[in-house]
Amino acid sequence: MKKLLILIAFIAVNHSLCWANNPQQLPTVYVVATGGTIAGSGTTGTTTAYKPGVLTVDDILQSVPELSEIANVKTLQFSNISSQDMTTELMNKLAIKVEELLEDEKVSGVVITHGTDTKEETAFFLSLTLSSSKPVVLVGSMRPSTALSADGPQNLFNAVLVAGSEESKGRGVMVAMNNKVYAARGVTKFHTTNVESFTSHNFGAIAHISDRNIDFINRQKSSLTKFKLTKSNDFPKVAILYGHSDTGADLVDFVVNSGYKGIVYAGVGHGNAAQETLNALAEASKKGVAVVRSSKVGSGSVTGNGEIDDSKFGFTSSGYLSPVQARILLMLALKQNNNDSSKAIGQFKNIRDYTDCQLDNRGLVGAYGKSDLTDAEIVVFNNAMSDYKSTKHYTPKSVTTQVVAGTNYKFICDIEGENRQAEVVIFKPLPHTGDKPSVTSIREL
Image (cartoon, rainbow, N blue to C red; front, top):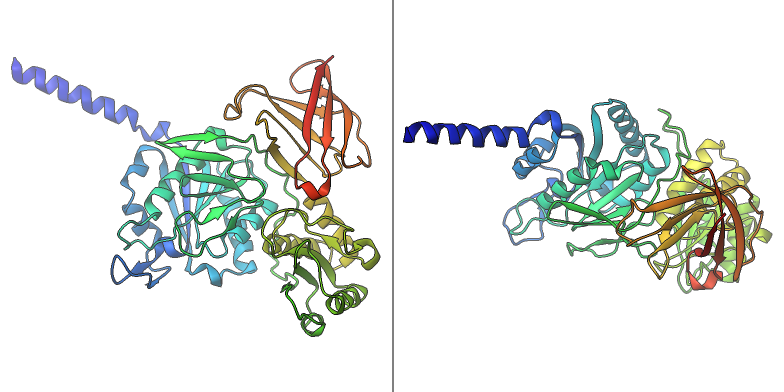
């Protein structure tokens, strides 16, 4: 009798475990490997010397057996390179492959293992070209697999957790590193070796991860796809030139004479350039080279027509985009507009001005849309900022061509899912503050 009870208990426990890990109830997530430090190997556990892109995707997954508890994981070895060797051509091929994988209705999301050096560029490229609403999460590590405390396994586990979550749908391309999740737009690597190496200076993390829980603190909504994927890899050359003292015209002239179609000038301060450099950039613009002013500072917005009159020279400014992400956007805009610099700059400005939803200082409300608030969509957080489900969306019935900075503007909006309207007042801050538009009052009609 005792043996019978033990047998029944054993069967019951195993049935419970099988039910809990039933593959049919788990999301299917593809892990697409491109190489990087997460696939790297060193001679000892304490050395910083290692070779990236050594392990295969299946080798990497062996270090995270717990993945079988949260997802049905499928794998694809796309490449096995160090991310400094990532090219636009490879980014484009990766985007086409990921789009193909996401078309399978059984696939919930995609994780891409990627070296950290150019991850912010690939993430932004994908965010501008992928059309699926399913989550795509880029992940990597700062330490190779052979390190004493390798960060790759935990990062990969978190990325698969995010990619398989229902709450991740519609949030676009993300980056998961060190228990935090960032939107592709604005994410950047800010430390050379620390495991806490990624941040988003202007926007912050959109989620934190702890004990298999994803706490989305920002109801970040994905931008609409701006560029259609094409197998053509004839991307125009766009250079980033770095501002510093003693700059002249020679580097600008060299880039123009070398056939570059665009220049992102990572200027000093608010995207400023020495007079000789400015004159050279103006000449480049006259020759049909698209010029975008950015900044080497690392945070804050580069706004138009400050110390430099962009409209006079035919330039545009990068807004909150970093130099490397501004380069990606300008390159795609030039390609789509057949290297017409005027049209490309116009498209650059339209996409640049799309501002993802950000919380204001109260952590309760946010607004996103174009920087002048035309075609804005307003999101109001009714409860705690981490409770993104308790939101209302207000879509303006009327738009304005321009809102003066430092003033309020009133929108009459439709309330999503309800047959009524609301009066929403938005405050547009002065450009030098670096603040985002915020909701000041709501009156449901």
